Image (cartoon, rainbow, N blue to C red; front, top):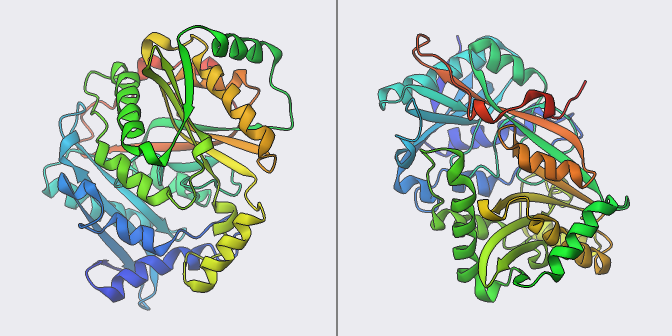
Length: 398
């Protein structure tokens, strides 16, 4: 008989960690996440989200005692009132292709959230920021960029058959740097770079506090107009993200735009360390540390991923976004090992950013779904920002 067991000791935690390696052992696209980073996501001393939330994990065991599935559930009290329903989250989901196992895991997560006063479950998402471990891959089953989720095609069916509904879509684009940008794009970029009052700076670790403040200021101004119930970015979560990426960060891939000295836009790109991590099997012992340094120095990384961006509303469509890409172009000229940019992800509720990416000549490569499940099926389902979605202008795929 199948059992659902909470992760409460080293043995169950090890089983939780080991499952992906078993499920994806024959999939050449999969990149094993670092066990240490997954552990930190559930470490109360490390993850700042525990200061205003809680999380729990489970594994599913079959009749033979073999691990056949896993899931985590969590909630964030800071966002309790940030929607028309009180929604917690589920994530870190992995499962064999068996609806009975998947549904039992979903039921367990639902029950725990309901016991804690929640009315809905959003997933698969992260117990942290939305630049990592977010969404179910439904199109573009290719090697994932760093931070992006990857899963078998049958996960979509497991979520939707249970009753999860699509809350929004997440689109990823790829920009091939060996192909010229549209000439009109560079004309705007050059114009904005020469316009009085505008200046551009890349990230500098010596001034990290300043750039964190600038990021928070831009991000909150850029995203708060989308929803009246917007929850401002917490600087502590940004510092936590910096801790995670400090060993792979390239300061010249993180750019800020200023107008008369005030921050108005930023774009953050990270070297796609997954091109190295895929060779390390999720472990960072001494041999793998040396392997990492060698592969990094020999320019194994040829792709960068755009993980976050924001433009103050007053400056949207002003060309400032093109101005940042112009700065990036100068960087690429002395770092020619970068051949591709992945622009991920942008929600279907953000047509302006989708339009910008398409204007660069980038092509749509992947789609993820973020789902929501209402515990009371009598409550009308609402998509995230339905009014902002023009289906005719969204990327298409076969």
